[in-house]
Structure formats: C-alpha cells, structure tokens
Length: 275
Image (cartoon, rainbow, N blue to C red; front, side):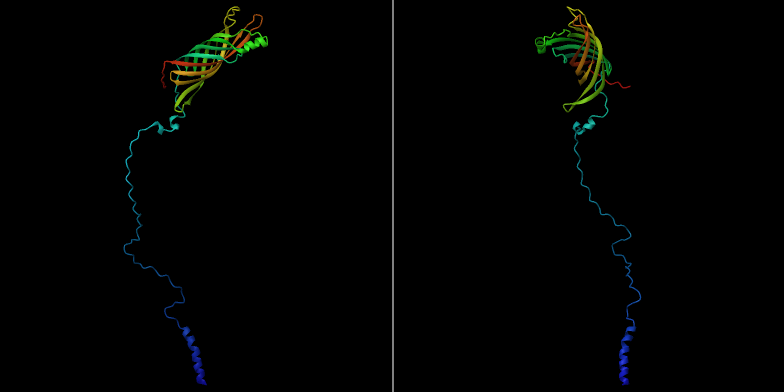
C-alpha cells in the first residue's frame, strides 16, 4: 500500500516540476527588440548624396522666322486714334472765302431762295470776323391764292430782297468723326452773330424807305475733308424792322434761312508752330 501511494505522488509532482523550469531561447520578461539594419551599404548606391534629377531632353531646333513687313492692319484701332491728339485743322491767320446758298423755312406764302458770298479772316483758331452778302429771289406758293380767294386777305409786302452783314463767328467745339470706316473727318460747331443792312420790298418805290437796320444770329457745323476746304451746314435768323403800310406802325420781320456753303482757305496749307 505504501508503495502504491509513493508512485502516485511522484506522478503528480513530475508535471509541476517541468512547468517550473524555463524553456530554452525564450525571454518571457521583456518584449522582443526590433532588429537593427545592418551597417553595410549596398554596392553602387551612395546614400550620403542627393539623387540627381533626370536629364532633360534637348529642345527641338527652332527654325528661323521669315521677315514680314509691318502693316497698318497689325495696329489695333486704339493705337491708331489716341485719346489726346493735336488738332488736324488750323484756321488762325487764314482767309476764308465761301459761296453760300440759302432757303427760308418760316414763310408759308413766299418761299425765298438766296445766294451769296462770305469773306472771313480768322483772328484765332476759334474766332473769325466775316462780311456776308446775300441776295434773295421770291417764289409764290399756292397758299397765296387760297388766302386771297377764300379768306379775302391782303398780304403785306415786306419781303427781304438782299442783305449785307458783319458777323463774328465763334467755334467753341472741335472734334473728329469717322467717315466710310477708314478716313477721319475733322469738324467744328460754330455760332455767329452780327448786324448790318437789309433791303426789302419797302426799300424801293413806291415807299422808298431805303435799307433797314438788321441783326442776325445762328449756328451750324463745318466739316473739313481737306486742309484747304470745308463744307458748312447751318441755320441763320435775320431780324429787321419794316413798315409795309405808312398808316400802320413798323413791325419786326423775322427770316429764318437754312444755309449750305463750301469754304476755301488761303493759304491752302498750314503748319504747327510750337512755343
């Protein structure tokens, strides 16, 4: 019996003794350390120097450009016309001779067409003194016959026949305008006023009142297609006192005429003089 108990005790104590012993090659107290890289360098690679960038391919050989002459088409419109430019037309010190044609626009009974001549001298580029003479021809309209027959009216004869005026012409506005897309035409806006003499239907027989004092004022625009020529469009009003009937008081006659003229400047050319 004692032998059997000793054998059983030995069999129970054997596994516990085996567990108490350490397994060879294992460290159960610390985590495994990372493996350090070997200090040896790989053959053919220098880790101390930065990598060189890859070589670029050689640029293709450029062909020489052929010469092309400069043309105005290569210039933009903004380069052709500057914001501030010198004036393209000067009148100072030049004489102006202008044939003028006129037609009245405010007479419903007698239409008058006139022709005349204006001679001016430009004291400044924007101011001139002018002498103007105009002669008118009267044409009767259908309103005269209707007024005499239907209304038994009597029309007073105080129509203008000719005039001679001394005017001052002031041109406060100067500019440029495009004409037909490619060319530039210079223009100015002018105002005129003056005084003079008017001969009307009462100046001769039977009343023989002689010439009447008159004044005029108006304005218009002139275009300068050439440096020696201008085309003028304007409207002019002439006022003068007239007494068609001896027994009636004098009244102020008003004549509004549209004018068209062509001016010629002498000398034909001009040049800039800088101070």
